[in-house]
Length: 447
Image (cartoon, rainbow, N blue to C red; front, side, top):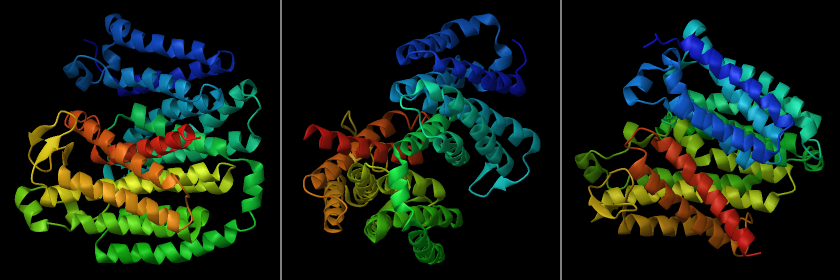
């Protein structure tokens, strides 16, 4: 077995971005076939080529190279998600390949400043991902731009990859159980996809009120985040993340959006205090006394903040606001369901097998918790309607989407969390994403 070299592995990892140049000439289905072929090559052929120097010790122990398999799988997912936007696929691919590779190499060789919320990561590594990935993302987006019709604005090509790189660096810095080869491109693709929906006309109209709204948002959210930290409801890094999310929501969705965000946070926080004696005895009380960290804030409300920006800067205001409402309802109602089930659930079952398990088991559901989650989701969706964020049947779409997202999360928690593939924060993010997608799907189906 050849000796493992992390530098050699990362060099190969980064060089694979050169294949993104072909996206300018390939149809989406041809690119998808190439990505699928690369996955099969890494699975079946690469192990026979004496690739021990590319396999980490954990890969040998497992018997297969998990990260090397996730890489082409992520590229395939990008192609299928954005078949008409090879520029987005290429930019996200560049952030995955070069940005993530640089984060590892720079973090190992020059990383000295450990991040307070994750000492396993360094500031230097995160900056390398954001900047290096951003630069390569711009180059690849510019190269593939002629393959998009109509061509995306030059501002998108020059700015969007840097914002996507920053988002990917933030996600990569969190304590997330998901492999970087999946979490990094997903984060980049979500930001690139959202920015791709924005147009100059909507942004120009927003320019008249945006500076004033931003100053108000800062003036409101900084003191609120400080009070939350002082009160012990959030950690210091959680307060910073919460302040940023609050600023985004208040800036782009106004006081109505910020009020819904605040109520959802208070509802989730209050639910963690329910039945504390029983939770403490069973050893299932929230860590840190229920104080929210940055991962929790981003997982539960990050998508809502992004949707608020899309609502203000694109022609898709109603759809984006529906996503925001569904995501906030999903994050809060899932917490309520979980905490009520832990506090008062008489019988808990593993979803979807319905096998009886003890309270607090990953993926467990209870009748009491499920009922509380349904009521919470409907209440938050109704509040959104009262605030003018959604109208008509959108209340039901948001509530049903939130409930569907919670059940999907429970199913994944029962199967993937024990295996260490997903952690609680990533499951929460999937919950909000599924909720938003389901709500939009219901809206489209209803006509």
